[in-house]
Amino acid sequence: MNVHFRLIPEAIATSDASSKAGVLADLAGRFEHAYGFAAADVLEALEEREKLGSTGFGRAVAIPHARLAHVNRPVAALLKLSAPVEFHSADGMPVELAFGLISPENAGAAHLHALAAISRMMREETVHRMLMEATDAETLRASLANASDRDVA
Image (tube, rainbow, N blue to C red; front, top):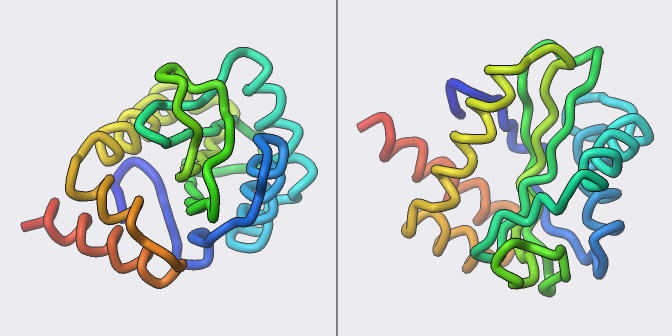
């Protein structure tokens, strides 16, 4: 889907999480389901990163991210939340989209490039609007595919 990170359809879902902890747990479960990572390892890494400061990006988006030893390239997961969740974002807005990223432990530049690519995508007004308006995983997938097709054209 993107040169900087992998995002497969199974990593895109909706979530009824009602707290930041619930969002992180659901993302960890999504990484386990889609990529086979141990959810407990992912959750621990995401929680450790979150202790350094909120990954609430702004515009109702969070980008929880971490690094793990057994990962060979950056991979992503996307959750559309059924209701806004407080995430202590920089702009003070609750989160409705959580775009998770897991990178290899030693992927300094690759991790930063992947974060930057997600950030650019979330700042793109059309993509942001389509994802915010999506009501199910299939619509999220289609919106991301449309965004990717537009980038290629």
